[in-house]
Length: 465
Length: 102
Image (cartoon, rainbow over all chains, first blue to last red; front, side):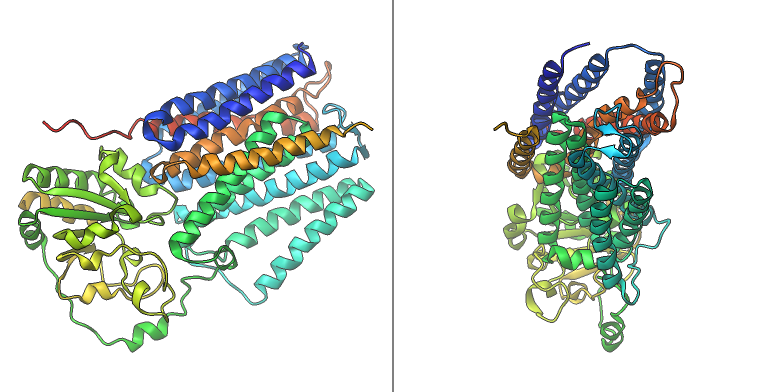
């Protein structure tokens, strides 16, 4: 048994190690070391918890068993999961953090003596407030993440689900959560605690269903943030420094990522949260447009264009992930490089379904990270490049965002693909992108559409090079 | 008058938000996916609460309603800890620099 002060110091140490873990991610070279700091912090936190409880009862065996069961499931998933499924995995993990927070709160509510928080029906007021906030946020994180997971996995349709009176209903429920917490704290009634949990689960569900698939980067970041605040709430209840520090770190991390994603789409956070974007009210814009001619080509034409280019910029998007085309793409680029063609990759902040999604996929395909550039770094280079190879991206290249103030994506930062001498567009059809709008780029003089599956087309081009 | 310990925890919390703010802005955008998976893993330090909950039973009966919730929470957090750190490790191992030209 170690003293409470000593264990508090160790918790502080593990909190600092977690800060260093995030700090390491400032560059790929230091990131692996950062991850080790994180693991070390976790080992310290768990060990200190064991030591501070002290008496080695038979319960310890069960703790170890449950850690091992959970750990092997986690390890198995971590090794098996394909990189294209990272958004789903992260959403799934968020839901587990949320649920764990709820369970810890329930356990503390049922048995406050074990946590040193008073006795059942007479829990310290401060602890009860912290506990109920932690539980409510945890429940929202859980059900919200489950919906996000189902949408990403395709089990649930990615299109927004909206109904009349949705926003007033949500507002009403959020207000009722505040009232419930207030009543719970004044009456200590366990019934109110359960109602609070049910209502929180419900609002998590209702908050996410109106948000469409392309807004998932924001949703995942937001739920990331929530899971942090839930952990912090529980950290206050348990008076645990490691948990408070971590909760604050994760909470602000998720908030910043949400902000970056919103900025990448030029939309306000509230606009995303209120949802309904990309719903089917775009019928008018589609039908009013007459069929405009497009130039379409085959792998041979594309290979010819690229062979005669001296620099090529590749613009990957979600379609590349869906088609699992990243490896085929790398092989194509290898062939191009052998012909002394300069190749770089341009990544839009919201390409894919989560922040940094494209970067991970390219890294998986052994693309060196110093060939991959962010929007601001590379946007001026399009004017000097010969060929832009757009694979599975759409809205993020649409010049309409710069020219038409009526467009729903007006003002969104886009890649200046149209400035290239020629544009190759790998796409399955002319269908509009997620924002539901037509891409002017398809009809430009210098655009060649390649209608095919991204992976197959890329392989064919490689053969023709 | 003595200061409530809650104020100290609140101070830690507020300062950590600022630390988080500056640290996360310095994370390179290409590592945003590993950032999410590692924050996932570290927020599962909530396992310390789950362990206390799991061990809340007395010597005669290890299991009661409260400790059962704790044990399940332990398993959930453990999935996240192992899964989160390992998948982050796996991703980070893939980020490579350009090999020296020929």
